[in-house]
Length: 225
Image 1 (cartoon, rainbow, N blue to C red):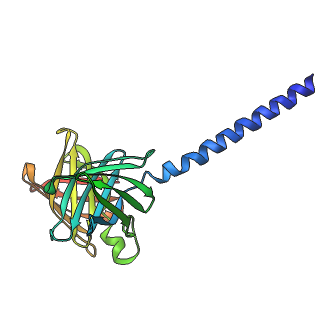
Image 2 (cartoon, helix red, strand yellow):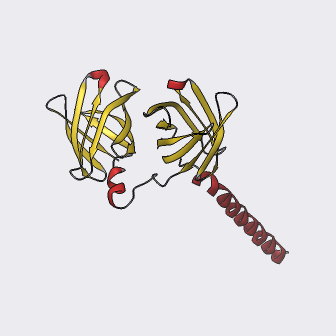
Image 3 (tube, rainbow, N blue to C red):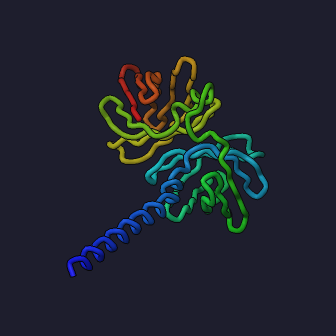
């Protein structure tokens, strides 16, 4: 009887181990799908362009450059659900709502404005790269910012001298778009405007994970990843 109990206990432990292994393996695709940040080439109803997304944890920023418009447009209401791989966002300048799905880690597909179709594929600009591309993408992503002891979050995306960004100060409790964002890879100098408060920020990327500078004259700010 004791021998039988031991065999039964061993079998139960084996089955539990197998169950955990299965659940861990099943969770890998969802984990891999959590990352939509980066640069994509987009085709919207046969109009080609570029798409840039940044952020995580449900807080995303992005912009699109569609041929024929000849300028970048900020995207709004960007949402991504890792488990279902569903993505949606708005292109307000064209009054278009996009819905779709991450069908592979490097491809999205969906519809917009009703029945028009769109797809996007990664172009390799999602992370830090070697050489000039590394420097151009060095500010992309989310940062913790401290502006004259006011804390918050800040996000950048872009490259090749074309950036978009936004800031969330805890005291205001809302996101604000940043403008005139400039980053010089060789000197690592950065500057941008916070137009809602008429503040101009200048600074430098002193390390890959830290910026420091001044704003509105003599107030100091820093940001860390």
